[in-house]
Length: 178
Image (cartoon, rainbow, N blue to C red; front, side, top):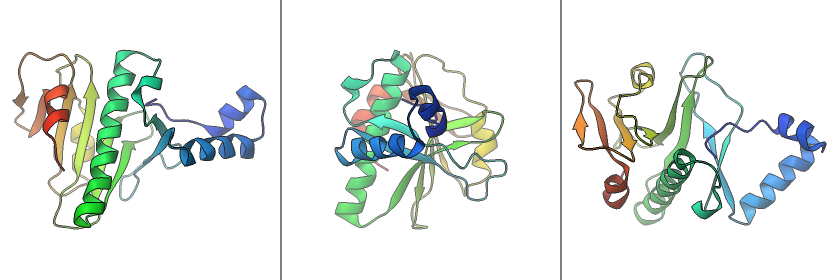
């Protein structure tokens, strides 16, 4: 959860064919066990274009640390909201992540197909209230993006001079709409 998955590395580790691993992942997607978040690369120099991240529809399957669990919950909420917008309002919003060579990344990017909406860049942290420096790198590639850093353990919400909203993840999850 939350890490790029190299199918080739997975195939080597499990000693299975690349196509077999891909077929297994496709079956898990078809059964709504996992969903894929792909990297966004349009107009971002040095972007990573290949490896997707996978998340569980049911966050109870996440056996990793609290950070991975929180990221999975946020991924599910973003996916569900993007589906709601498409189904109820006809607005297409794609869920991606941003990553460039060198490892700098933003956990989630909501990219609207309509110019009526603006992109949202979302970073998820368990307790770090220091604003991710990666917002500065990626915000220049979007027109006035919404920048949000969700923190599980935070004493107060605040907005930086660069318009990064740092807020409690639980409150955001209860009230957010794209």
